[in-house]
Image (tube, rainbow, N blue to C red):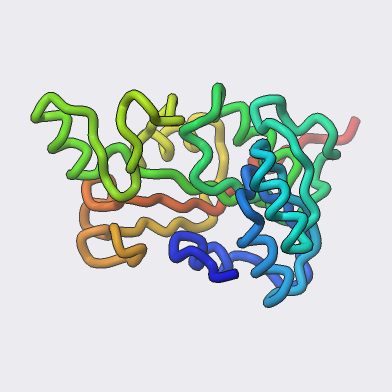
Length: 205
């Protein structure tokens, strides 16, 4: 199973032997790749029956579940990494989903299409909803309900005190070039973040 180009940068963030939870895991290609190349253990959550069947065929541990229902069945810090790729914008409450990701996982990896990209802005200036490589669906058949920009996402992280350990801001060829570094919100089509929950400190009584 060939790994999609937009998933390749995630591999660098995963330590060998880690315990992984992949939310909206699709056909299980990321988990299968990490299992075979990094020796990871874990589960995928997926709602689509055909994708669940594909995971089973690939030997990936999968649970049929809806991310919007939460992660109540998983204990705090029960995974090294919780991954959610290209699903944030399709959730009812993406902020609550990230909070749960950072409760269940020691780190969270979240990726999403950047609605601040210049192609999106150009379409909106023409009075049309955008259709781009990162946002291929049309307005009437899109699963996306909460689109955000790089700046929106980082503002939310700052507000909730989620620590950004690393980020990858990629162009349409899934590479990071000078333009992405100069004006990331304008030239990045895909945003990828490695997050950590705020450290809770206190005094013993």
